[in-house]
Image (cartoon, rainbow, N blue to C red; front, side, top):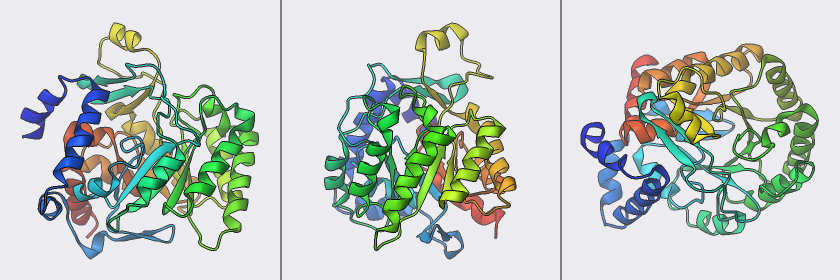
Length: 345
């Protein structure tokens, strides 16, 4: 029903516009008494075999929602009702920012993909905190943090520090985002010298806290093996708890969408089905290099239960959805969890 009736109608509306409308509709629906209990019947599956203890946190199941869907912490309580055990909010920056010029989100329907150049549009860390104070259930919340667009790379560490300190009491884990292709020169922060400065500051702050919060690093799918090796080494040396693999890609390989349309869309990060294999390759590479000692959250191109199983078999301990949730609909998390129970009894 979703793919044959509802999705074609939703896809008549520009991507960012319908995203905002759907968010408001979900918020409104869950005001209705009994809606949460009803949604649990349809979308959630509970089984002790699905519980995963990762980074010292107990995940009800291995399926989460990736950063970018709930940028401002507006909907994480409600989104957990769709079968997600964890929701990553953000990317959050110290100051509010509007992001890049619109239009900035585009569907490639033939490829089951999206191209976006949102640019870390968000309401800023202070306002997000006010929303995180309203947590009403046991969903695990991750805080994906970045720098403001106007902050020079040499000062980026201060933005990450600000978000980390202010959010510390309100999220369950952190993701350091240095890999989004939609902020000018942000991916340069994945270079050894820049990354060491940021992670060293973050780890120092964490040591001063009474409560331990896991810190993960989100990386690009466009890294070569040398840079991947550098990131693995730095992550291990700094005590990073895990890696989120991967962010969106700037490459346009293997697309069936008309070349002239791709060129008209222009810059942006590509997500969805075309990213699946590259993301899985990086997960496998990290798992083999670290002998399974570096936990990986697998994200990128998960459009079916089989895609999720493939990432788990490659070494992912958890998986996240975004584009697949948009294309495949609200039952995808439940379908994946059923497949996990069948594949790993």
